[in-house]
Image (cartoon, rainbow, N blue to C red; front, side, top):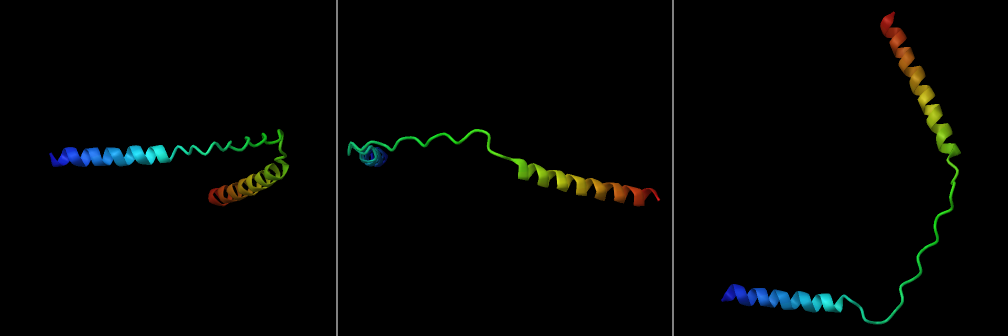
Amino acid sequence: MHKKNMFVSILVFFVGFASMAQGTTGSVPPPPAPPSPPGLPIDTGIVVLFALALCYGIYKSYKLSIKDA
């Protein structure tokens, strides 16, 4: 009997909590944000990535040439 009373108490609590969470103030949600502009520039990132790849390639070729010698 104790478990049944506990279950009913929890059920009543959560039903009351859910009904309060609905918010019946009648306020209108804000409009959605405008879409982001298409075609954002990525030039700087590509240049940096290319420079890092070039440096890494030089490093690896240097290490391989030392290993073979």
